[in-house]
Length: 150
Image (cartoon, rainbow, N blue to C red; front, side, top):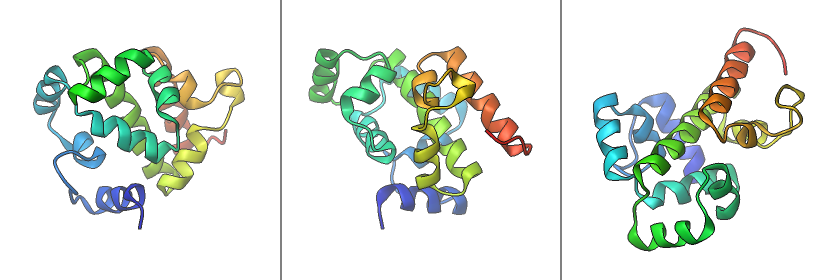
């Protein structure tokens, strides 16, 4: 069973895999999450998210506005900056919101990578490269939850 599927099962059961996985990240208390982001999230979370979304590192780095040379340095150091950590967390939150709503990590990955008219032909991930874009993707997911189909 793949990590993303295990992650989803653990999300729905409220169990944690480890201190470093995406599941525990969104389950943290806000004060702990802020502290963890300020200290820098582990680059292993970047790798895990890229794998779950089936994205090459460079594509996820583009979405997060992390230059390739910076990503290389961050991976060597093992931690992201505060700002990069916050941007990573926003995409983790979208992925888990989509997984819950759409029923599986596979459905979430497919939806997040599919171009949509609602986003001007961009994928939800591409549109979510800013805080405003993330909020709009969340709003579309909320509308889907309310029965509006996109």
